Amino acid sequence: MQADIEDFILYLAAERGLSDNYQLSTRLSLEAFAKWAAQVHGFETPGAIGQRHLTEYLAQRKRADYAAASIKLVVVALKVFYRWLLLRERITHDFAEVLPLPRVERYLPETLNEQQIERLLENLPESGPLTLRNKAVFETLYACGLRVSELCDARLENLDTENRIIRVTGKGDKTRVLPVGTKAIAAIQAYLAGERPALVRKHTRSHLFLSVRGHRLTPDRIWQLVKEAARQAGLPSNVYPHLLRHSFATHLLENGADLRIIQELLGHADISTTQIYTHVEQSRLKAIHYKFHPRAK
Image 1: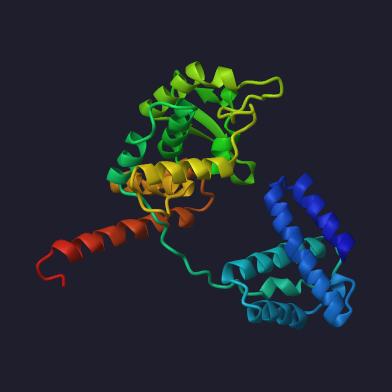
Image 2: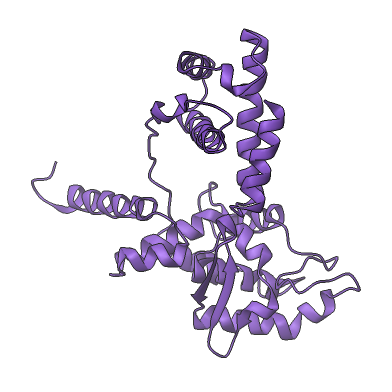
C-alpha cells in the first residue's frame, strides 16, 4: 500500500498542483491508515480492504477521541485515494465512496470591534527599533484581511503603491489581487523608505517585510508583535494575528459589503466558509437587541 500512497501523493503534486500542506496532511492520514490495516488485519494492499474495515478504522479513531474535524480529514483522504485507485484500475470497487463525512461543529470567530482596532493601531510605539515596519505590518494585516502566511510571503514585486494593490498567494497556491487602504500604503511607504534598506543583507530576497537579520519575517515573530501591541493598548489577552482577519471581514459586513466580495477578498474557495461572518453579525444584533430593547429580557 505504501507504493500506492507514494504514487498518489506524486499525482497530487504533479498533476493536481495541490499545496505541500495538503500533500503532507493526506500522506499522514493514509500512512496512519495503512499502518493500522497492516497491524490489525495484516493487509498489505488496498484491494484487500472492504467497507467494513474502513468503517472499523473510523470508529477506532472516534473512540480515540479524535475531533470530528480530524476524522473528516481522514475520510476525505480515503475518498480521494480510493477514487484514484479505482480510476487507475488498482482496485475493482471503491468502498470509500459511501463513507459519510462527520458533521463538524462550526464555531463563531472572535473579533475586535472597530473601536478596539482603532486603539490597537493608534497605540503602536512611535519611536524605537523597527516601529515603521511594525506599524506597516499591523496596518496591512487589517487593511487587506491577510493570513499571516500571506503577509510573510508578500513580495516587493507584487506591491503596486501607486494603484494601492497587492498580489498575494494563499491556500492551494491561489493568487488574488487586493486593494490596500491609504493608511496602510502610507505606513508601507514610510517603512520602505525609512527602515527596510537598513535590513537588507547579501542573502535578502524580495520579501516585503524583513527581520533584523534580513530574512523573511516569520509567523512566530508576528504573533509576538501582536501580543505585545495588544498588551500595550490594554486589549484582551487573547488577541492574535488571525483576529485582525476576522475583524476585517466582520467590519466589511457590518458596513454593508456584499458577502461575495468578502469571499473574494478573503480568498475563500467556498462561500459557506465566508457565511460564518453573517452569524457573527446576527449574534451582535441579538446582543444589542437584548441590551437595549425594553421587552427583550
